[in-house]
Image (cartoon, rainbow, N blue to C red; front, side):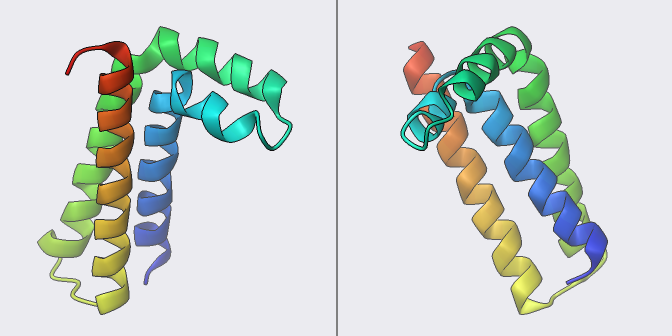
Length: 102
């Protein structure tokens, strides 16, 4: 897997985590003792959530372009892309459920 593809997958999941930080962040960070960071992330994510959703979708689209647009059919790259996509969908679903949109 090329460095660009790895960075794209990592950036996609990171931006999705930041986007869902208002709801998912405290669930993950407080049990491991990072309550201050969880609160900061929750405030940041709530304020910039629509922008972070857009950035996440752009990174995901770029990742799909790198894999399928350039005909990169390495099995590890395709698996990483789909794992990233599933994680993003889970974070989007959780955030929309927590906000009461669904």
